[in-house]
Length: 408
Ligand code: MLT
Image 1 (cartoon, helix red, strand yellow):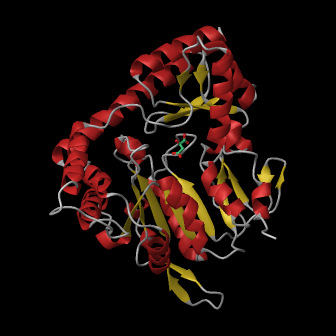
Image 2 (tube, protein in one colour):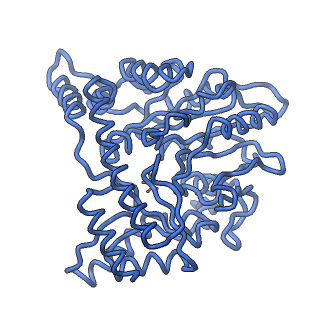
Image 3 (tube, protein in one colour):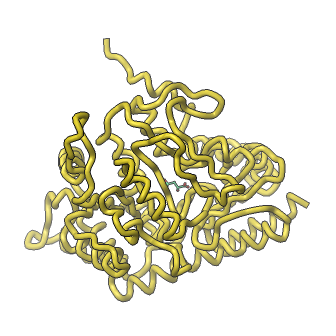
């Protein structure tokens, strides 16, 4: 008898964004004339920038000729891309990350979901609440949690991120081995200073813990005093892995490309305390289960770091940040309490006493606007909704007008 992985039965019925997509489809079927504006899932809407398209095209053209055709590439990514990443994303910010510590992949969602495979079953995990659901769900699938009770999985150490603590996770009061952090944060849009990250790096070093740092939204940081990488903090290379993505930075949600940094100085431990190289483990997993990102996509990603690419990508993100400003202004005018949207594409809005799914339904039914109910990110999100800035300025402006009318 083929038996199921019964840990899957502990999960919520469906993945948050699939659930929302189904609800929106049901609404759209019943109301075919409503022009629904999607500010829910953080999916980009702008076309790829010209320099990136040129890189892509060059890659495709090379693939069309026998002389320049490429079959399997290095699983970890082509040196041209890994070198460009190391120089531009890390060396330029004083972070000493070498190209061979960078693993190019098909995105931060897959990597942040897969990375837990490297750890023992019985480690203690600290996860923020609210949180990007992938970190939690993949650990549930792997059997690292108990059942779901009262909005929480047994066995997980939840770090509440609320208005009272500035939406910042606090250091765990009991020891943990693995810590998930995400800044700029999804879903709250909150950002962490260097001082805040330093407390986490110190904690991890003192407790032989590991930080999985999701920096998928770093390109939205406009405040130069804020760190874009955890490796800007001294000592982080020994205790932190970083996930990065071209999805939101350069419009690759459909194109698929990201990378994970696993420093060679980073170790995990066998039960007897022997050090094991995390870089070696991830390399073994990656080469076994992944055959690399397609050559044209890596050429497109390389173009993000060209002189023209850098200018275009900045303009690209500025456009979404301008949308975020419109959303923030509307929420302020309506008297809502909110955070995010300044160095992040997400605005996290307190519903003023409304349950998050009720607020979601209200905006969908009365304004034809899709947001994301905060409760989908955890119990601490029950009183919030997340509005994403990923759409055109025209649509965001129209959506905010409709929201104003709906909430009058
Ligand atoms: C989100 O809306 O939270 C993100 O788009 C999800 C993702 O990047 O997978």
